Image (tube, rainbow, N blue to C red):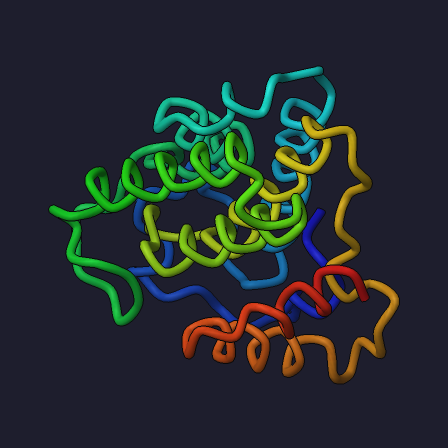
Length: 195
């Protein structure tokens, strides 16, 4: 499920901070980490997308954490647990549960009242999960998986997340679309998700 433009790969060594919580103690480079994460993400995708679920069943803290655990649980000790430290992205860790609950309540309301088209609901949810930055790592991939699982639960096609784009520019386009959403314009992120 990770996209080719996301894989950093290579022989760049991981530093000690990057190795904290790593279950696969043989992993020593970014390329090896990408490989083990990709395998685990595929297992998480099978779990998340392989079952028929009701949309409202996805909009719980328990499901958000469980999906992250399924995507990263064979790689990181802390998979599925909210981060406890400050990062350069995201809300203060003490606000994660509250902000996520507000988002999930908003998403339920949007669905119940058809506030936005289904794809906009999924992308708005994805964007806010990234802004909250619930976990120490994997937030972008997790939030895209959440959008895909919601799409599937609504009987809609999965997003393509730029897979049909030029890989050389996809990452840049993705971050440009995220920054536009940060400024209140969600349309570039919806367009990217469909490209």
